[in-house]
Length: 170
Image 1 (spheres, rainbow, N blue to C red):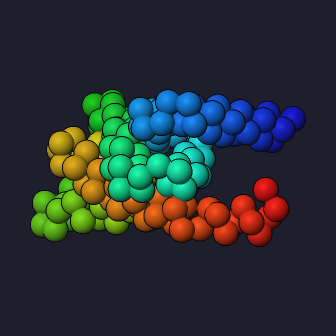
Image 2 (cartoon, helix red, strand yellow; image 1 turned 120 degrees about the vertical axis):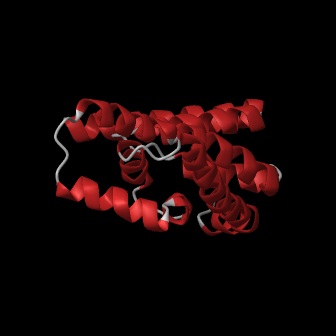
């Protein structure tokens, strides 16, 4: 029952987002990317919409706007971590080790890599918030990574959507 509900919800999101981007273009793409990445527990397939949008809209603009919306949406995970930071009173040795690691090496590059790949960037954002990492640096790192990924996906849509549609007979 729960899986059916989840599948239905994901299908509804995909249908709504495809219609919205088809009707309103770039502003809807920004909103879809923001919503898709703000969902912390439930993964919404906004990257599929980036692929589709790249086939009909300018892939550079698709990548930038989807990257910006995605980065802003990732602030949800960061905010959860910041809230947990304030609530957690006892900090174990792992917390102190993580803080020292960040102080020595920084986490900017790690955040960019997590944002630019299918790695669990929600968890990385939560950890960054938990460790009191600068939200501005987190947002910039997320923007760089998400924009790189969204631009690559948009260009893949630009070059590959026609082939996929022809192959599957759509």
